[in-house]
Length: 151
Image (spheres, rainbow, N blue to C red):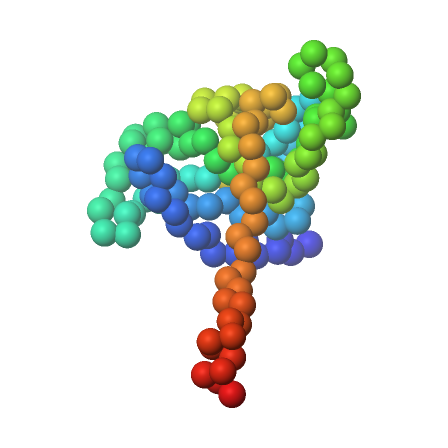
């Protein structure tokens, strides 16, 4: 059985370093089955080399990876996002695998999956939000002035 290739990661500037965005491949290759109210997040990782060509020492990369606050949701337990903390039924948006999420710093249990990638197993309440998809740029609406100039 062949593994599907992982798409090339995009980098983005975090508050203290450049990170490589975790990419969801449509399945959970971690080897972890998520139970109950927990979620599994594939965390964004610090880029070993900055866009300016500076290499970070491995110890610093490890420290900064542990403090990562964003990633992609890989799997949800069956009870995740079912109820609010006060016991009332969840009525808000329910994140799905593939959603980019923002989580509390140092939240959950850090682990390396079977695929060698960095994950965090945590309670769904450690999540603070999801990233909205970028909207494609649209051409400006024609105005009477631009219509007369074109015609």
